[in-house]
Image 1 (cartoon, helix red, strand yellow):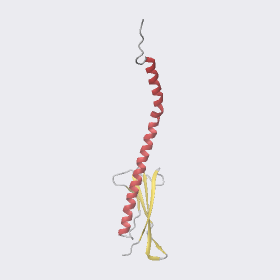
Image 2 (tube, rainbow, N blue to C red):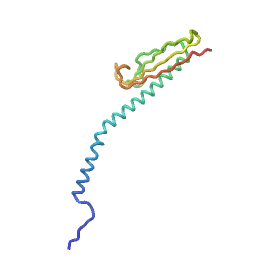
Image 3 (cartoon, one colour):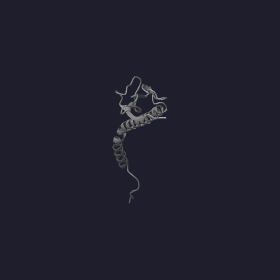
Image 4 (tube, rainbow, N blue to C red):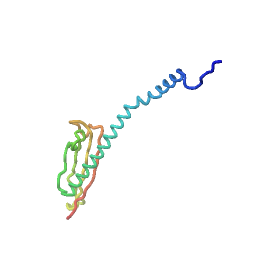
Length: 138
C-alpha cells in the first residue's frame, strides 16, 4: 500500500554523523595552540641562525680587512629587529709557535632572542657560532 522512500538520510543518522564528527575534531582543535607555538619557535630559531651567520660573515670580513682590529661588541641589537641581540667575542689573536707573523684570531658570535635587558645566558632561544681567521701576509 504505502511505498517507503529509502532515499536520503533520516534525522537520527544526520545527528549521529554530526556528533561523531564533533568528537573526532576535538583533539585537532586542542592541538592547534601547541602547533602555533612550535611554528613560532621554528621561525625564531631560523631567524637567529640567519642573523648569527650574517654577523659572523661581517666579523670575518672585518678581520680580513684589518687583522689587528678589536671586534669585541657586547649586547648589540640586530638592525631593525629589537628582540634579536648578539655579542661579538674576539680573542685578539694568538701566535702560532711563538711567531708573531703567524697569528690566528678566533671570533665567536652569540645570538639570542629576548626583550630589553635580556642576556645570552638567560635566553631560551640562542645560538653560538665560532670561526678562526689567520693573519694574511701582504
